[in-house]
Length: 309
Image 1 (cartoon, rainbow, N blue to C red):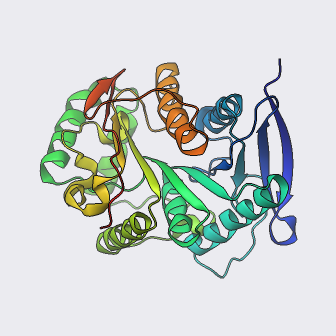
Image 2 (image 1 turned 135 degrees about the vertical axis):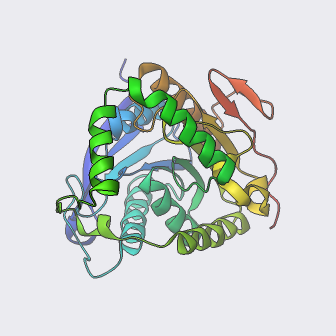
């Protein structure tokens, strides 16, 4: 039996944006919906079609979702090229919420953001009261000296056996020893924007504080391939002690890689994100975990009650 219906949609200014709306076919639909967006320049389906799989899983639990391409990515046309990427992403995500609200009557949303999508999700979440939850995978990380050294040593020990070692070694010599600059590659305009480490940290702290003040539920997930090790919320660095960090769910997923390549990694990701989003949207998940418990290769910390920062 088909448990969902899927409909391609165009929306936004001039109907330039493209998405796929997935709704449950035989369930009462949750009053909160889910948005999924691009990971960098990846199409809205996500790496290894992980967004498609998550949308199907959520539909089976009664949660409607929209996965969308931001302007200028995937099937969506570019819109306002004068604004910075963050501003354009906020506009696109608000247009997506407008579409779902007008189509399904849903007025609250959880956003799943992977990699660069974490920044966009945080930005719109801090500004739009319709956002009630954020699930962020491999977004901002601020590892301190011990974590960076341990990561470097682990990677160095593992590197010679990795298939990409030879190519990376050659490129390292070219950049660091021969001072050769890589050939210029044409990228979409918004992928060339950069901020200093201090500016990034300041924006992260200020935005997380805004999200906490709005009592937006947050799940922060970090992959084992990108960050290698984690002992005490290491990817938050000094921010682990911030008031906003006390209420979020933090999870280091040792057996999940950055682009969820493996079957095991996909299962762990879908379980963690699917359960958390379903809880936020519809309360369909019955699984509960105790603080600091290790489950199936992932160290999990359950959220506590939101407190004002």
